[in-house]
Amino acid sequence: MMTNPVRKITQGQFSFLPELTDAEIALQIQYGLDRGYAWSIEYTDDPHPRNTFWEMFGMPMFDLKDAAGVLAEVNSCRQTFPQHYIRLVAFDATRGIESIGMSFIVNRPAKEPGFGLIRQELHGRTMRYTVHSYASGRPEGERGGN
Amino acid sequence: MSTVTEARNDGPTAIKDTKRRYKAGVIKYRQMGYWDPDYVPKPTDTVCLFRITPQDGVDPIEAAAAVAGESSTATWTVVWTDRLTACDNYRAKAFKVEPVPNNPGQVFAWIAYDIILFEEGSIANMTASLIGNVFGFKPLKALRLEDIQIPVAYVKTFAGPPTGLIVERERLDKFGRPLLGATTKPKLGLSGRNYGRVIYEGLKGGLDFMKDDENINSQPFMHWRDRFLYVMDAVNKASAATGEVKGSYLNVTAGTMEGMYERAEFARELGSVVVMIDLVVGWTAIQSMSHWARRNDMILHMHRAGHGTYTRQKTHGISFRVIAKWLRLAGVDHLHAGTAVGKLEGDPATVQGYYNVCRDAFTRQDLPRGIFFDQDWCDIRKVMPVASGGIHAGQMHQLLDLFGDDVVLQFGGGTIGHPGGIQAGAVANRVALEAMVKARNEGKDIRAEGEEILRRAARFCSPLQQALDTWGEITFNYTSTDTSDFTPTLAVAH
Image 1 (tube, each protein chain N blue to C red):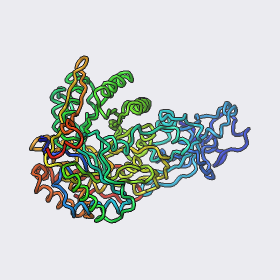
Image 2 (spheres, each protein chain N blue to C red):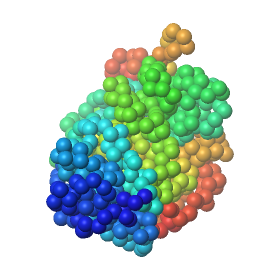
Image 3 (tube, helix red, strand yellow):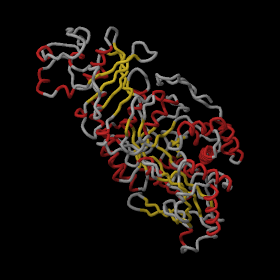
Image 4 (cartoon, chains in turn brown, orange):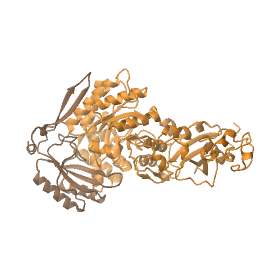
């Protein structure tokens, strides 16, 4: 179990708050839509802090302007991957931004195994650090629900 | 000084007859060609706005011409060697003078500089002209560079921020909310081991960044290598404990450039995502470190140590908005730009002006925020402003409302001084931040409902309740000295 104050991975915009309800998620989706963002759903069983490329649950929904529709996709992803991390990601295509405008987690596995820190002692007192994901010790597809 | 008051009077504007113009002796600056009310700045000119307080009896137009002259090519007397050059190109031209509203005795002067005056990609060269000898010029009681418009052609000679706030967010995997930081306290005296403890607790508790203070370099109580080693152990341990990318601004400021490079290389070797320098290292060192950061995928944090000596007083010095523009060109990723609600100088509108200079793709003239010129930034990357100094969780709604998402909010005392400990302080700040962002996105009026939003969040977060109980009433509600001349300025009401 993770030992940080909220006992879970704290990536995304709202990890320190109680899990958002579907109604609350819909309000966040609407905020992004009002700003012209395109929503996308991504999932993973390896939430290493530098694992940038979670799997895409379909394409970014560039033409979906309806919060309920985006939320339905979230729930479809939850049904398919109930023990994965799932995040909602909003893309902002404005010139000079062309990056992510919002990102927050909407599904977590029942238990979050977290990470270990591997230290490799080098010359002098120099240290090389590796953050090791406990979940990734198992093969793909066998990491959930543990 | 006789140049201005006792020069022979041959008329109000430039003397066109070259024989008269170059006769040995002293003539007025306006007669030398530094005043031209008909001049229309070229798209490649740099335009400066100065606030001039002439000595008693000195004509404002002559004072403006003198500023143009002394910040470009003039000397106090006529020199025949001017005639060996295309001298009119090298003369800056004052082309407009207006009284400062509500400030008798002061004028605003607009002065244009040809692009040939400035070496490409060198803030040191530009500043040597614009804020060089002229600031000690005796016929002026005081002089302030209020704003500057830098032409696209010159902007494009700079590489700008090595990372920029967009790429910084991608590297850190943090989007849609302000970043959170804290400066390690006490500033001085902690050993490397004790110092690393503070870093670990703050980051594990929920902050994104911890920070060395400006005067932490390599003193007897903590040498820099010890600090870097313990800090990076704390950073990596906190990253593993939270699953987030974490950082701590390692201050690499040193007595020599070689020393700074050595420290920066070690920070990189240990895997730090960010290094930090102080403004006092100077323009050339800043640009060198910017190039280093670009080569080494490093975020470059700028602490504006020392700026208050020349930015704060409204009559003399340089506005911070000009410093911010130069720093964006010189290439820093983070810049302390004020809090408006904290312990340090800055009225809210003026501070917002600095933020806009850091973050805009194109800055529009905005007199209530102190911005006199449009500025095209030509897609140069954006600087992440940092709000630091006497702010706390109870002000979260004001901070988010004033500055939006693209800012690092740094709560030093407001984290480390928490009655429940450093982790609890970090939790309080992170919960307050996330609750406020969520509420704003849900359409709530956070200015009006902010305190209630915080109180509700504190019901599920006792560290936030403790923070509000401890600091909820603390404000630094003093009138600012550096305010816009074009709007009534109000202190932030609590």
